[in-house]
Each structure stands twice: as structure tokens, then as C-alpha cells.
Image 1 (cartoon, one colour):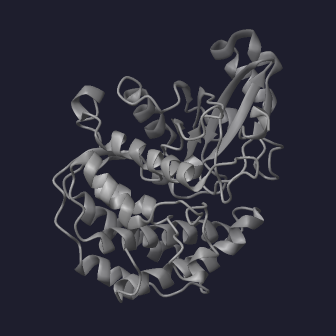
Image 2: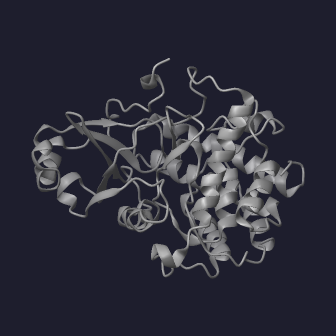
Length: 359
């Protein structure tokens, strides 16, 4: 096994997601100097939200982030917000890429975008790489490390980071529930599952706020994290900050665990997992919650609510993605299957509400 076997690789740009290389070269010349003239572009795989491209010139590399094509949900793809929070976190959280340049001139590639440093390393997607030979004990430690970094983020001093006035932490839980319910209604298509009972349950079972305001990532999952190739148990980077804000960290934990499939879960849910969290050695949701409480000092009460919210939120995101495909706003065939995944997530919400899923 060589190190290159584990490095996340960019490839050819997907059809319909190409960037105008000539315009980029011209625009970035004042930013990158002579390197701009020989820029080449590749696209990183995966992802249904903001798009990520690798720009290179000789041995120099940068990453470009832009919103998805055809998106009508501006609040979920705010490049300036992502750039701002990465800039603020530089001095207090060592895992974020360094932002380099923000562009709001839509004449360049048709949207806002920004450049950041490239962090080379291992990204774990739906399956563990075959060449990554970790024992169950190592996998357990790696995944605990993954959650420990989230705990570190939730422990960032807001004043020190200059983010004490960023976001609106008061009333965050209610705004999130109401906001995601509205997004669901706005993205409904004729072939959509009915989520009325789930939305009503979330409204009726909202817990009191934790009283803790933290920087929250809002999409913390394995393929948004980079591990060291030399030491695959070590997190070296956290990506995809477009939905980051200041709010209730328990909602952030619930959003992450919405992705967390474990071996005791129903087969229909495990079949649609997006990361290999049911591999031998992986900690359970209960173990993760216990460790989170230990690391942050924040009590996690009423976890079924946060887990159900995390699943429902993913269902809404999936439906928004499918809506773009249904309306002909994107050609990406991966989007066609999202309506099925939305049904699966809603089924899990129903089982949680009925007390039939281990949380």
C-alpha cells in the first residue's frame, strides 16, 4: 500500500458541472500570480450540495467551492457565510482549511465562489477503502476521534473567535424545526411521502434549549472530514462549512447521528447508509452520546428528539435535491434516487416516534 492509494482523488468534471477555465485563469491572475495562466481543473467526487473542485498549477494546489447548479435555496449555499466562518475559526480551531479569496462577481463562473487551501488526505465515503487495513479497535478509536473533533468545535470560545454575534442562538431549536418543516412543504412533489405526523411530533416534543451556544457545523459527517494518510486515526481537516452557524450543539450532534447507521438498525435503513458506521468496531449512537457528554460537559437529554430531527432534516435535504431533478434543473442522475431515500428516512422517523429504534 502506498500513501497515494488513500489520498482522496479528484477526477473529470461531471457533465453539466463544468467551470469556464479561461474566465477563471483571467480572474485569478491577481490572486495566484503567474500560476493562474496554467491552471487545470478537476472535480472531487460525491456530494449533492456545494461543489468542490481541485485547481492545480504544477505542484501548487487549491480548492474552489461553489453552489450546486440549479439550486434555488440560497440560504443553504451561502459562499460568503462559509468564507466568513472559516476566516474566524483560523485562530481557534485548527482543522478548517485556510480561506484565500472570495468572489461575488457572477461574470466569472455564474455564482459566488471562494478559494481555500488544499488539505491532502484520506476521505472515507460509503465504504472503507480496501487498502485501509484497520482493526476493529482502531476503527473504534478513529470514529471516536471523529466525534471528539466535533466536541472540540462545540467547545470553541465564541468571543475569542469573534463569533459571539454570529447567528441567533436564542430560539434556535424552534427556528430549526419550523424552518425545516417549511422547506419540506416547499419541496414536495407528487411522488413524495407524507411527513405530516413527523413534523407534528417534532413541534410537540421540542425540548428546552440546552443553554449552551456553540459554533455548529450542521453537516458533520465522515466524507466532510479528512484523515491523515500517515496516521488514519487522526483527523487533519474538516470541510463543507456552508451551513455552519452559532446555535445549540445538541442539534448539531443530532444532525450528525442522523447519518449514523448501526448494526442493530433495520435492514432497509442500513441499505441506504452513506458512511460505513455499521462496520465492526464502530461505536453505537449510545456510546457516542455518552462520550460527547463527557467531552463537552453538556447533558444530552431527550435524545430521540434530536435523532428524529437529524433524520427528518436529511429527508428534507434529499427532497430538495430530488425537487431540482424533478423540475429539470439538474441532469445529475444520482439525484433521481433521492425520493426513495426520503421515504426510508421518514420510515425511521416513524419507528423512533413509536419507540421501536434504539437511540
